[in-house]
Length: 207
Image (cartoon, rainbow, N blue to C red):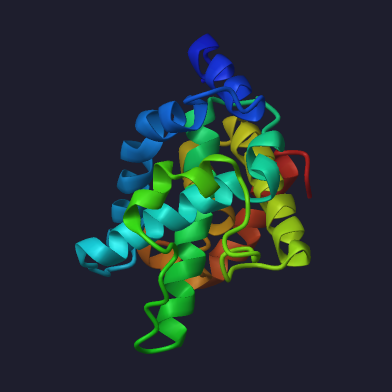
């Protein structure tokens, strides 16, 4: 699906920092982000309370606005805005869930308050209290932006694949699943996942 005129205008309004643009952006896509958070957690067999879910939703929106909307500026408009935002949100949530599972009891807040989704500092894409809200350094952010940019290209190139190949590529490259998790999901031997990914990448013109 291509980028709609409505989303193109909304995206440009945000990048131009027009009044209420960010609030309109949040209103339009907060449901999508909540859905991604819920589905990603369910896909990993995890449950979360409302506060944790709101934390993750806030963290996703922080990624969208961080460093002067850098993630949104990297959007190359090869797919719909919703598709791109879903890719970014899923990667953020997977990273957060993985970090939490590696450190038992780690429930670090992703924002100072739930209301910050439409609040002043976030709406302007600025830092909070003189820091990047306790999150990634510029080097880490740049690395994540590169992975997100690649993810958008993966999503676009996946149109060349059959249904099973696309499913495996999506789970590995976009959802961050392991070979074991993918093999269980698609009913294939774990040893076949690597070769299948290699063939899919070759078909996509990347391997």
